[in-house]
Figure 1: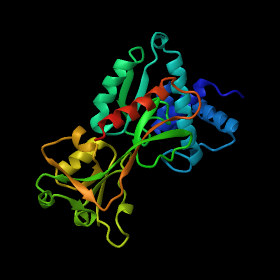
Figure 2 (figure 1 turned 135 degrees about the vertical axis):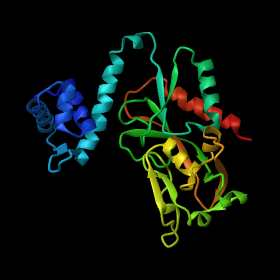
Figure 3 (figure 1 turned 45 degrees about the horizontal axis):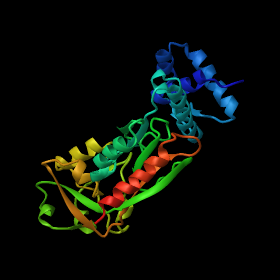
Figure 4 (figure 1 turned 60 degrees about the horizontal axis):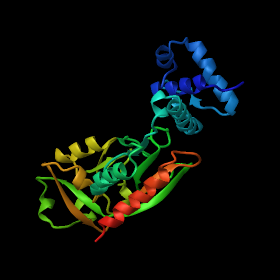
Length: 287
């Protein structure tokens, strides 16, 4: 059997809905027909993509890998068939938060000056790879370790960490904050795209409580409301200023790498130019 684009689209809807019933209704198909489509894909791949043993449909490990590959393939086809792309091919640059920090505007302006024929679109995507593995963007500015398979990365910079405090926290009186200063407060953790984990602290001296969120906006509001404190990098204060937040340098924690990532293989032809320009912008900003 030949797997066609409709098979990929059907699988992606199943993965998104988490239910054959809801996916079938959305696709205007019968449930038996959609189940056959799923089995055809699984038979072709020789792998079980969906765990049907629970009430709520869950993807298997192989299913999660295939979901990202299928999403990237569908996105590539949609991009190729977009009539608007015949006159121009925008370069989509994703980021989950902060982009290139204080240098983001400079990067965009310099790109417009040097590449007037190629639009650079900056897209925030709340995802570990800012939509890169799913084909939503062509390249991404990411922080921390990038472990997703099939990606190439270029190290751009290292950023120091900062403590993020509610404005009424007693810790704001300190010029600098240590990890030990934070252990008595709940720690806000962005579990989708954050760079903070409990591994920053020694095993015997870790905070007792955490508050998990799934995007930057929730993370900022949790701290601003006084429910937790957080840890980020020096890129955050400039792009996420708020009257209820105070940023302080954090000592005793390692810096965070900032990388430009893109998919292996054929990609947008302007990616090498973006790599070069990002390095130039950062180099010009160094004292």
